[in-house]
Image (cartoon, rainbow, N blue to C red; front, side, top):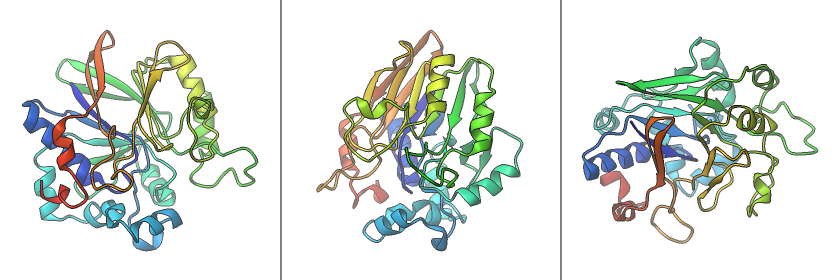
Length: 291
């Protein structure tokens, strides 16, 4: 199976689906699944935007892509989505409407639940393994949403931080076969490996899963900057932080390293690459809606 990987979309869901459709045209193959590592930009109304999203949207309206294109059915958007069949599975980041997502989550008993008008975008609950199968191939994905509270934070139960009930669920998980760990945040020590951006503490719960279950891959975002790919300190997991799906600073083209491709047969046969195909440079802030 072929799995497309994205990190921070910040509203640019339709662009992600377009890039998957373009990859299909270029290769003659099919994307079976999209995984998205948080900061989807899931806000169902303008008055529910957080301060950062509202500020960025003043300069770049694509930050409002989920609200404008996925909350209500739009036949023009549906035509674009119909060119692919893959669902998008995401974990929560820190820039989502968590109160709204909490309400949807409480209505579902399944590990994933839809949040959009087209039933193509699904939130993966924290701490519930989800099995995806295509014909005779299958893969198990574990998600951990939100971020860890930084040291000294007085209000550690802000909705953007991992919640007590989620941490309790993760603490009582039994060791299980996990192929992919999908998160927004990282191990607590991620910032010690060449990262020099925002202040962040990482998440102990993520570290526990990596050390206990040793998944084949860990995909995450949150920290910005260029992609980073390295073997996790557990010696097994390939740790992948992708770039945000937005334009590079002071340019019109998409930031390099914002789309990955996982080819998966089973735990013994698989490969991952960050795409750098020439056609990606065709997608600029002015052209991508028309390609």
